[in-house]
Length: 98
Image (cartoon, rainbow, N blue to C red; front, side, top):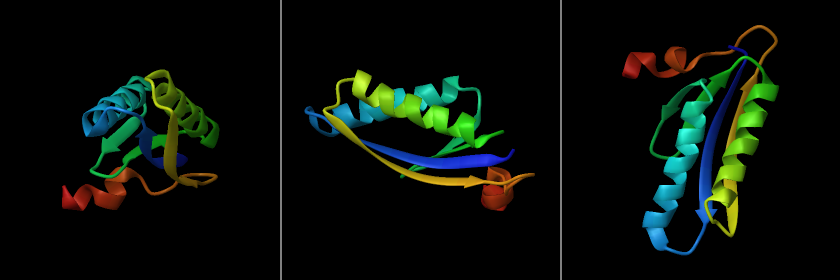
């Protein structure tokens, strides 16, 4: 693993909290379908991949899914990490707390 991303999407959409949660669930399905390792947490989802390109491509798909699901706009809060050889994995960071 050479890249990771923490992403939080906040759809701007009519319909209140239920509609926001519905759209976030659709974005999490996109992440799941990517085949990449991921962990859903209360504020963000963390994803691991082999390259920054792979992670950025997934970010684009997540943003597009929000808009496809009817949002007027979207805020994406993203943290990225990448390295030449490897970086700390999800398990290395939080495994001892699970």
